[in-house]
Image (tube, rainbow, N blue to C red):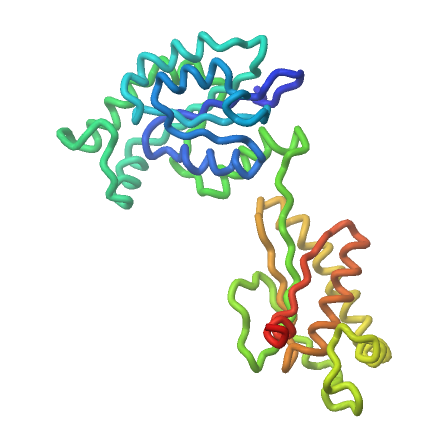
Length: 297
């Protein structure tokens, strides 16, 4: 099975299933893949949308629709809507999400949200009734996902594999290289952090104190130090090994911090040279020099 359109038809993915089974998480994954995502339309509007989804999504030809029992009459009307799709214009995929009774009871207990079937019955009875009501729609599904034991990362991996990588729409990981000064505090949110304070400090070299790692005299001084080029090369090799593996884990962002004492000379120069080295390997990194930005501000 593949939900990926292989012709000129618009690609339409309908995401449905049991309440609490992870539909919102799946929808977020499709949004990351560039789909126009529509959530919880009333059935009359959903009917109109499915009749002409491209027109409702500003010409985009990859659409994901989330619909479930929150829409009155969904259990009886949704199968009819699905069977009535114009498959000459649409390449549809129906994804049905489910989980075990135990997993769903736990999730509703943790979130303390009411079940769409109301509070006049126990949560377990509501789950079982919903399962019965959606049995026909489950039977029509192209892909049934049991998320009982799945993490968010498991869900992202499957959606990206089935609907992203094969079509070249897999989202790229945003890589940031951040220079900073330890005396101003370690920045929050760094995934990897490197301390380069072992390098000779241009701050104590005549004529270089007021310059920064962006200036040629500072770069020339550091490049004359044997450890500088060796450090950049080793960091580039390490990141060359790590980055594809982080990308395989569907990371959206990765921030690499490089710190020296004041964050103006050594860390800045390392970030600049490291970004250049990674660019030669096909990785585009955003360069952010925290202490220099503070001075400009």
